[in-house]
Image (tube, rainbow, N blue to C red; front, side):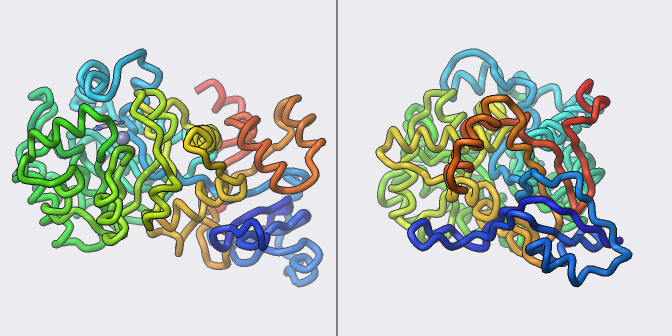
Length: 439
Ligand code: GUN
Ligand code: ZN
């Protein structure tokens, strides 16, 4: 089951250092050898081909294209593909008027199956191979998402939303149901193939203290679970949490008191956190998922990435579909760049591509499996056609170095640039596949 692919390759071995020009490997004419879905070797074509067993076929159909690791999305909601681009409102009204009505449909038998399939395929079209995903309160939605992920054998982290108050009755569980349902989903899915479970209380306003306590209990019972929730996204939300949990000093302290903060915790947004909260996050090793298209769409605010990183907080990058407006991590990198510009900082393109690959893999603690092309890692990769549109072709032709090219790619590139997407070496999307385009 060995195969080899010849193309241009870029991947990161560490956070890039721009001054020293380190942290990445680039092979203008490279070959990657894949054995049973895992990467066996990568290097310059002349060196790899000289030692390659002559029985291994070399696929040269992608010569001239750029191969990078599959993109990783650290925070998204699969059921919300149904409401992406729903007009208007800020967070709390948007939840009540669009999100909750849409999520209720996932209680209907079979509904989630087709949506999960659609969501994964849209991700593949955009070059995303791994994500950390919210399902709905219905356990069936988690079964739907993990079943579809298992079919494609993709590395996914997901969980059932827990919420027992301040939401429509049809969408509420109880603390005990939330705990028991999560527990049986963990037994069914966590660690099965490439799948992992995230305990998923929606956010402090929709979970009672009893429910958050039981979420913390799950984390203590199964220490390798993840925890995902939202924090400090919107000022009205922050004020509401203060009313609901008057005994806590801050929004983040609500989660701390219930034992929800650790290295496997990813908190969405975190725009309005104070310095003390950032210090607590850093001390606990929690990551913030920066969701720039969502934060702009809901008018939530401009995350100051530099401030978070200076406080020692790890920031990862995410689409947050369906408040987020694009499945494309390239477009998300672009939005992150623009938000940071408004905060007075520029994100260098090498750093942006690192963030969407190895950086996000590190945030999700899966960098020993994916995120780059080190030998032994899982062969999740995407083939980029950097001449996919007339403007891309023209502008790329005027670039003098890799940094310039990457910046043009993240600005002018989108799903049209993703020629194909591969999971464990197997193609799951091709832009030239007509059957797929019709779906
Ligand atoms: N806060 C609580 N739930 C949600 C959600 O579904 N989307 C966003 N953007 N924020 C939330
Ligand atoms: Zn979210």
